[in-house]
Length: 383
Image 1 (cartoon, rainbow, N blue to C red):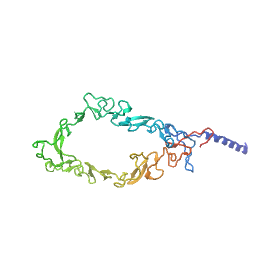
Image 2: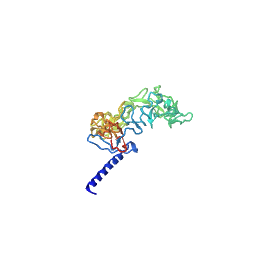
Image 3: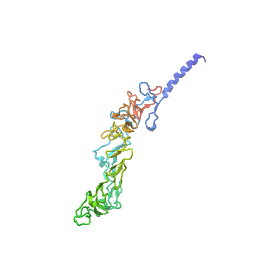
Image 4: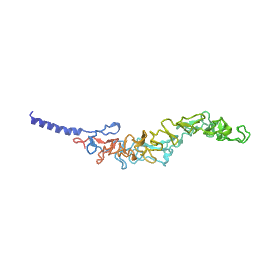
């Protein structure tokens, strides 16, 4: 074959092959495990063209609802759009939300009961009507009926060992000041000044003492957090506050180390921490006390009352403030004041990474951090 004929053969072969390759170039949607991520190629404009055609239809269970960014609503779990756009789950003060709240599960609004409550009658109209902590017919859980005469106390049938039924509640007659040795018997100072319980003399009550039920008997004892460490009960009473005394921390004779403080009867703090407002704080790691007590790191926290969660939280590393983004979020404007403001899973202009843009003009959604694509029609190239 001559040189001219060989060149013509190569030109024709390439001309035929290019449309064939372009028509077969495709990339499936990258949504959860059933999809394969597309190949992204950056260009000088900062966009990320995809080796496939733009897809604008949302893959299930995602949808575009209420003017939100394309394909950012999960119809399986969103309580504002449960199963379909605009299908809102009931919220308080809806009667059905009594002792519970509605959640969206698999696209269906369901009643989730608060702890110790249950929907035992299977009627969502009256919410979680049963208190499983005290209902003898549903004690601990629906259908668990106690024996006749047994109370349902703290979610269990009958009184535990050492307790006695007083009315509808179980009481420890050994130590209950209102039921001392018998139901309804109040522990108080004896009316008779010659009663043997006046151990320091008639009507004498030493400092920091109180009448207390102990071993089913009403006695004059130290009132918490005081103790009689010098063993002079009738002289100066209970003179030691064991909640704050470093030499008697929590008990007489229990001494804290030199670097520790006694807080609520416990020796604090371990080495490497300091005491800030009655708490032991590692100022090298605590974002609320970073480098010293009260030195709070800037930036929004992970959750704020009345506001949705943001994508990150302040952090403290070696006594210096930093800001850490949660997975799927990024600080694309390099400003810690507004935290990690971008959701990389849904942001069309920062899809999967800061600056990676989908074709916003064409309405291409960002789903789980990937610009949505579809195979190109036969005979056409990427667009």
